[in-house]
Length: 255
Image 1 (cartoon, rainbow, N blue to C red):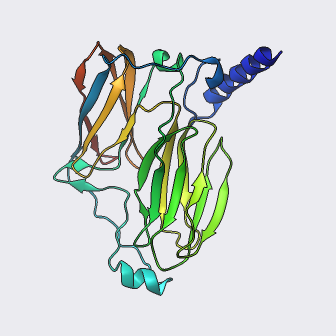
Image 2 (cartoon, rainbow, N blue to C red):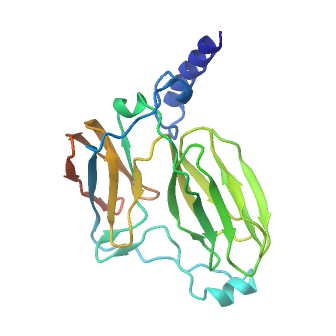
């Protein structure tokens, strides 16, 4: 009976995944029904650079005058939407999809994922984590912040966070791309969290580089997502101990 119920829930999730665009594709078995993947030492790696073509838009200056602390602590604060350095694009979320990954469960890292309120902005602006991994919100400023999560599949939360209090902790039961973060005290503070059932994701650095390691040999689709510029995909076959270079190029919409 328990297994029948589990399979029914899994089937409903697959149907729901087709209706909800930000749900990560999973197969009909729940995580508990899947074997845990055991690394062989012959896994592959993908990595590359995210480039930006053309003149990047000017970053918008943020009005922080509503909070005197923010105005003093971070004068001239700029938005984090499109950050380009030497034609390299930061804050692109890269993740891997494939039937082979759906056949296994993957132990979440024991390390916590931390997002800070620092200088009256979320740091980092884009981050990734696994289901059941712990996400910690830390207030590093001398002003009160608010941590608001707006998921579609997981539970929403809305917590005030004065200076010096303990970190707010959250865990997520379901994969979700993406959970939006906001701060009701400072509405310009925004961020995105990608929650996946496996560890095969990365966020491009300020130099546009990224790296994803530990991929079992197989056929995959690699997705690169940017909050404003959309997403791109590349199909790839990873052989045993393979190292593949996959570069993506974005440009301003409408150009």
